[in-house]
Image (cartoon, rainbow, N blue to C red; front, side, top):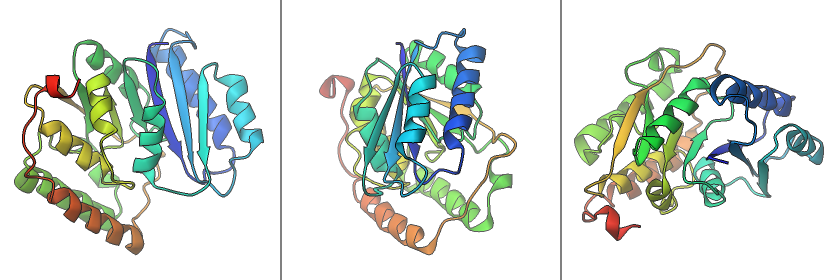
Length: 248
């Protein structure tokens, strides 16, 4: 195996396991030479209450040679789910994505190539593509607001922290596992931690939303939770710089 692929799930739709296997098969056949032994797939069930029974899990195990399924009873949020999955990674490189692969499949191989070239962290950049034109109004306002925070308040090393796909090597993995945000702003916290490393290598790759991707809105509860997380992340801004030798 040469790559860990971490995918979180929460209450997926009917038939999700078959759709996921089809996409995994396309990913391998079209971008990894048809070798199903190259990717260690880590599926994290973030406390789903439905459609994540032994039947669905058995289907995954029957069709994906190196799949690891991690389940826990309570919904903890995407950040917690991804930390749980990343902690189980076995190889030198790890990529995580949403389970519907909203930015397509070729971005996985593109990110893997960047990691092989020596990049520590590779992240999607949505600001130059079609992403914002597909967003519901409330979510668009939030995303634009976070972009302002990234650029002018946190002065982060990337223009877009919240794309749901990132890859990293062992240095990036160590930093990712230091995040504590359980829900959506874990991405911002991760890049904030990375930005303190003076000699870290970060690359942004432009991404576009693929046809058929569903873009849901944020609930008021999620908005309130993430506002509290944002304040907590902003309070971490003043922590000092480090070098990569301090981390690995």
